[in-house]
Image (tube, rainbow, N blue to C red):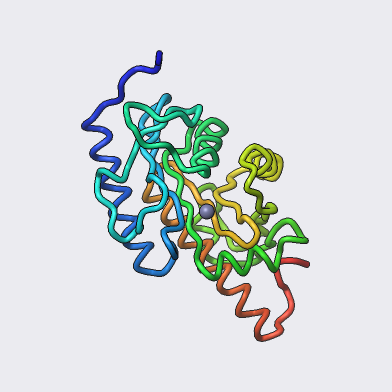
Length: 217
Ligand SMILES: [Zn+2]
């Protein structure tokens, strides 16, 4: 392997941040049945990322592995989860992205199914747009892309790549599956995740109340 070894102190710091955020998100029910993946960029070459199949409320440093940007494991016997490819895709596509959070909350899962045909959730008029980096006003429309789910990671990555057309895109939904959200660091990624979760919850509530202005129109 020609990839240089990673910085272990940097890795330990990233792992601690991932574990702290992942525990909080697990406590909110966003990672049912071990679902979800969480990562932090460690530089141009590497990312620290959760291994698959672990209870996300009980992670330890041993549950965080390192991959290179080709999604290959680095200095570990662990294999990255299939969805790690979606994390490294974002790191390759956006050099400024420092962290990626992927959750499966009920709201995210349902919204992905409801708006799958539209291919996006059109959000309008939310004060919380200002929580999204690069957005300064509620007087806007923000489209959150929705891509079809697939177990073929190459196909899924291609769908995502084609859907990310807007500037300052900080998330997408996978239909029936969950949300990917990212930011320049993990705190920003978390803020973006929380903002999307809140706005999607409002969209679903408006549907329940049969209020017009739904995201699929
Ligand atoms: Zn997933």
